[in-house]
Length: 343
Image (cartoon, rainbow, N blue to C red; front, side, top):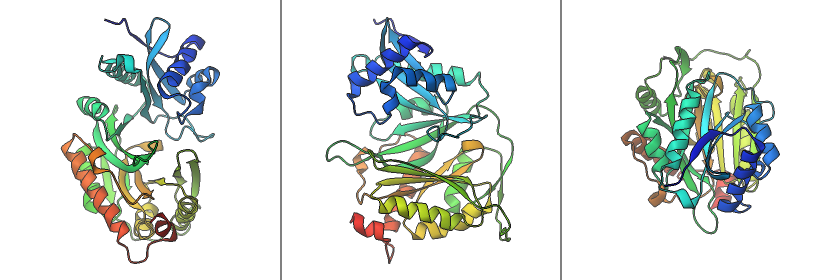
């Protein structure tokens, strides 16, 4: 039996051991280049944007899991009382099946419970169910599905990601403007979450609100992008579509849009966004201080259904609705130029 210690990464030696683990398991192919640089690993942990837990066998690192601030790769992202994304899990093949991932997850959960953190977002690959099983056992509930969001080497089709949310603190009642389109999906998501929300349908004019603030991030090596709506204004629909067309027209394969639900502008823009090829993704509760709606653009015309495995019955319902919306997008009468090019 291996003597595995799971600890919070705090030293240069641990950072060097983690960098070696990344190289041993993934060569130089990991998309987070800073994981190969011990000094940057330590700096990101000390800055609080990433908090790494490492599984150590003596001086050797055999596992890693991190609590990540949402949008941590945007330079000016504030670290507030917020959610954390559970990710960057790396397990050495020598210890797979020995419970190392479960021990890392338990340690991270215990740490988060002592911090001013609202909840944890588990990103679960749908081609394997171990992380889904752990998240479900801890009480996390599915809230979003990203189709084909992780590139796969060679000719394999991209992998999909299921996001599940685990609340760590009571949520104060918040006003939420739900899009009329797919209202039943949003109602079901919130019912499953059991969060306190006041649902509003708004038909008033808000033309005097501040202009939209949008941040765009993309990774050329993986051909994925993200549109993060920091503030929604009257020009939300046009601003997001402008950046969406730019990303998809630039051969990005998967674009995720995060737009706040605390404003009527997201609900008002939904129909136009779908008309330009965006697809339902779900919601992220309390993300960046408020609930956000998730939309996505998917260049690939095929989704590998064999790898789209989910354990939770509600996750299966969410999967079916997201797939139906994706298929509907492929059938629109006048597909956007980026969609025609994908075909």
